[in-house]
Every structure is written in C-alpha cells, then in structure tokens.
Image (cartoon, rainbow, N blue to C red):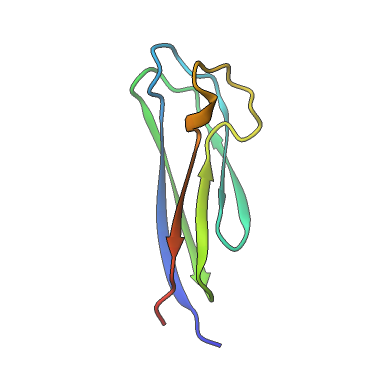
Length: 88
C-alpha cells in the first residue's frame, strides 16, 4: 500500500464590503480539520496549510464559516473542492 505526501494551502478571503467576524474554516481530505479563522477586513485573507499522507484519490474540500456564524450577503460562495489523485 503506497502513500505520498500532499501539501495543500487553503486561502480564505473576505470579498464583502464589511468586516467578517471570526469563524471556523473546515478542510477535509481523508480526515477533517477545523481551523480558527480570524475576523477579516474587506479584501483580507487568511491561509491554512495541510500536509498529509495520501493513500488514495479523493476530493479536498474547504468550507469557510463552517458553522454559519457570520452573516453574509452571499452564503453560497463559502466552499471549494478539488480532486487529488495521489501519485506514488
């Protein structure tokens, strides 16, 4: 059973006109991890790095404001996914 290391950087950006309060960003690969996300001024970003052993192809998903605590004008733009096919 072969594995390879994967390094993924997730960037959360406030694209709104007002400050977004603190929240939680969840990243999911073969497991899920919650990341404390600071309050973000308009246009500001916060990055999270994940390094993990990849043993099978999977989707990597990031969800900003995972617990839906920030009031937003567009609640539909908080998630992104990409397919990762491990090359071992």
